[in-house]
Every structure is written in C-alpha cells, then in structure tokens.
Image (cartoon, rainbow, N blue to C red; front, side, top):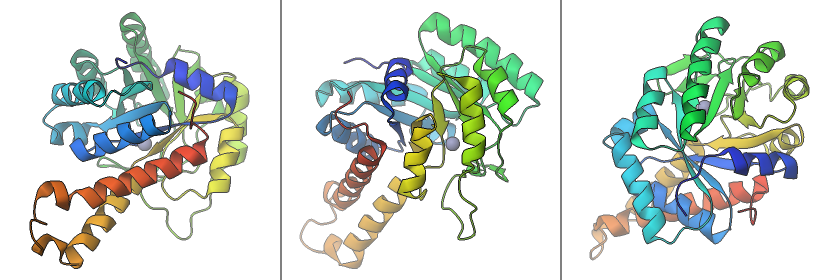
Length: 288
Ligand SMILES: [Zn+2]
C-alpha cells in the first residue's frame, strides 16, 4: 500500500475509541522494526520524523525513499503515514515537497495570531496536496528537539480556534511532557482534556510524550478523545538497554558478534517489543 495521510485512520480511531501510535524513526532498524510490528499486528501506524532525525538520516528525501522502499520490499499492507514531528514552518514546506503524507506544524511558540496565520496557510497547501496536518496549541514541556518548554495546559478556547481552521488533528498540552517524566510529575490534566474535547468535537486529539504515562492514564485519555499517541523516548531506552546488554555480555567479542547485523539485532527486537506493547495498550491491533 502506498503512504496514506493520517485522516482516515484517526477518524476511525476517534469513532472506535482507540488510538493510533506514532513511533518516531531514527534509522533503518527503527523503521523496519515499526513497520514489521504494525504488519504483524494488523495495525495502522504513523512514522514520526523530527527535523533533527530527518537531518541525521541525510534529509527528508532519503527518509521518503527508505520508507517507500521498505513498504514495498516488506510487503506492508497496513496503512502507513509518514509524518513530520514538531515541524517548523520551513521544515513543513520541505517535507511536503519531499513526499511526506502528513505534517505537524508546531506553531505553539508563536503568539496565537501568528500560529493561526501560518497554520491557515499550511492547511490550504496540505488540503490541495492531500496531506493531513497536525497543529499544536500550548507548548508541550520537556525537550522538543532542542526547544525546551516548561509544560503547560492549553487554553481550550485557543484549541477551538485552531481546530476550526481545518486541521486534521490537534496536539494540546495537558500537562504531558517529552522524554522521561520526573518523579514529582503531577499527571495529565483530564479536566483540560475534557474541556478541549468538548470544544473541538470530532477532532482527533494528539497526546505527545507517551513515554512513561501510566496505562490507566493512557486509557482515560483515549476515553476523553485522544486518538493519536506519540512514542519516541521509550523505543530509544529499549534499544539502548538491549544493545548495552549485548556488549556487556561480551557477545560482540564472540565469533562474528561484531557484525552490525548481529550487534543491532537485540535493539531491533527490543523496539519491536515496545511497539507491540504500546499498540496493545492503545487498542489499535487489528484496526488496519
Ligand atoms: Zn511532541
């Protein structure tokens, strides 16, 4: 199946009270692990690419080529969206040109008027080209590829304004943060989420910073209208842990254990296990 935008999979998720996972990719192993797991579980999936990861993978065109090639070679038939994560205005335009099927424009650090203006322009371009568009209101704390926010709760009235511009999905800060959650984290603000959901109706809502949010909070967020959940750090931690174990056990020194295809295999399997666990928690298994 060719790349699809995220609109249909998220509408179905919102109506069916489950969430689709966005898993960020960093290289070939990441991409292969996520695509194979989605196919095995018959789940729709969104591959997230931050601008930093895009640069690391030698540019957005390289990413598009790799993902499209893999979908064909691995016989992936579940719906796959290739999505820019936390895009700048310029990055969004570059990904549209490179062949991404979905874009996030993060205008949350602009004053609301400017966020509206730029989002509006990208809504028009994405509509014309058949891409889905995610907008953000209220900065999500932690580190967004170098942009560090303090974490906040979005203003539901501002969420309604942005939702009405014709975006496909809306990310709103509800106390969630990127990366690992600190021990004294206050938890998600379900009051804010409920107020946003009431003002934005059918709009699929996006929960960023899915790493380390307890399962019961994830389930409650899905009940309150979250249809897309972003997971990034958790796959990184799982990959690093499995790779460290391989080396600490001296396996790279045994036989041809230094072969990168062997060295990276435990990390690949660890990403697969993490993605599977998340897809089961989000309820998107067999929803392709
Ligand atoms: Zn994010």
